[in-house]
Image (cartoon, rainbow, N blue to C red; front, side, top):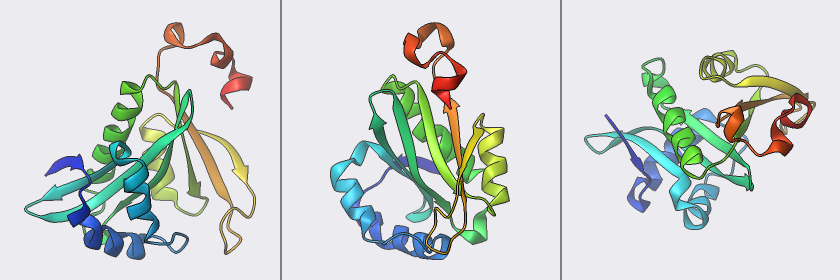
Length: 160
């Protein structure tokens, strides 16, 4: 299985995964995202079959935001999400970003566990974040060693 950049021909399979995994997003936002941010959209593919995807973007000059990460339900638990997450973090590091941020449903314990294993910290809770009223856990991860970070984000208060 390879992790590669999204291509327009992947769109139909991405929509299928998105509709299976999420209730919050408009599936057609993915094509708009690709048009505006092609370097932050990756898929896990083997023999023409897309098994998962990740999308991220520069949310400010020092931080990347992981907008969406999903893996087909029939293949979860095989490390695909981990590989996709590593790939977007690699892209954020290439851009010299100092941290990565994401939001995850409070009930999505498997995803929270994955993010913790990958070094993300739970920072705060956004009450009623999702349209059904469920809270979101906001998680962040430092990407650069402290000695390479700009001074304004070195303190714990600024990170959280």
